[in-house]
Image 1 (tube, rainbow, N blue to C red):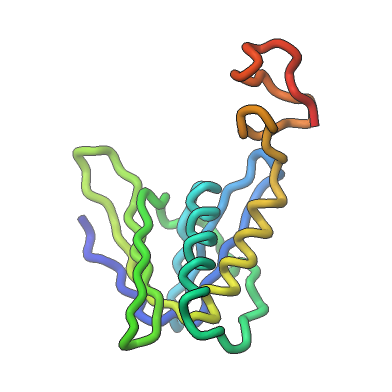
Image 2: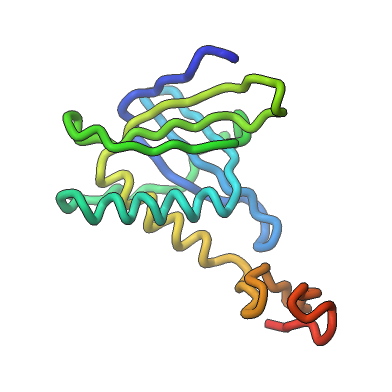
Length: 165
């Protein structure tokens, strides 16, 4: 495993997408000073992180002004793909700590990134991430899988009468 990348307090933390709906790639991006790190994530990971941060923030003091410039910075090429994400709250520092581990084969060791964000950064991330996730394809009302404009072969209907949007 390479040494862990510890970015400490971030100047910027955001999420964005590249590609058309149905083929989007979700990217987490953080900047500390001149160091910009972009990590590829699954839509579900982004959704769960946003939901978790939202729940965590309800137990804390209301954040101050939220960051507004949340577009991805170029270049936005991902350094690696996130396998797992860990989140904790450091009460003494009043910071949310995130640890991302690289997705690798079972017998390999990957990279790891650790960084801390403010409550304001977490709130802005949660709002933006939720908006991006909800902008995707609508879920099938029967199985929850994404619906294409032409419908899909829903496992709940055994391929009969594919649901349409």
